[in-house]
Amino acid sequence: MPRSATVCRYCGVSYLIYSEFHKLNTRIAQLEAVLQEARESALKEKTQREALELDMQEWEKALQSQAQQKETHMNEEFEEKNRQLKQAMTREFEDKLEKDRLIREGEARKVNEEALKQLRREMEKLQSHKIATQKSELEAKSAAREKVLGDALQEADKRLEDSREYGEQLEQR
Image (cartoon, rainbow, N blue to C red; front, side):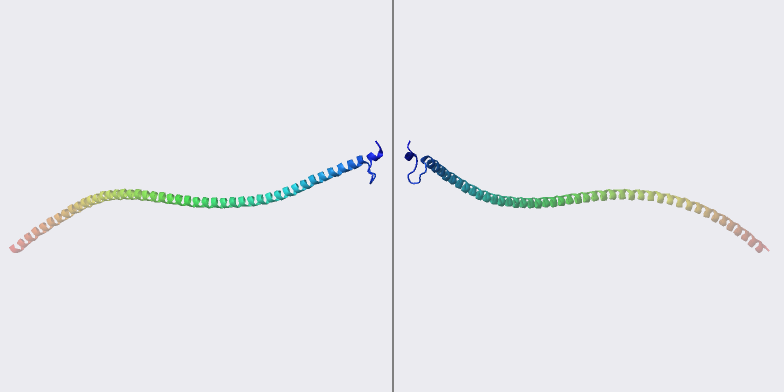
């Protein structure tokens, strides 16, 4: 092949080199386009990632807020149920105490009534014993007085007899 067929008449560069150079330029342009697409895609991905991260942060904040609200609500419910349970237990305990108090009062009343009846029986026994003792003492005193009075009466009768005899003796003289 002659040299004129392989070399450019303007610049003198070989067509083979020119062709290679042109292929390289085309390839560079293609790669630059791919690189530009990759940069745009990366930028788009970065923007999407940042937007996604922002959305995720907002979602986490919302989720955290919901969790706090739910926790607050659950704490309030727990405190309310705890308060209601405490009130119910207090009422139940007070009712049980009142019931026990009433039972103890009833039992105490029964014991007191029994003790009072027992005391009355014992008092009646003591009174009847005391009355019997007083009666026997009175009878003994009465018998002693009757004896004393009987003796005094006999003495008085004897003196009267003696006084009559003396009076008769005085009259006879």
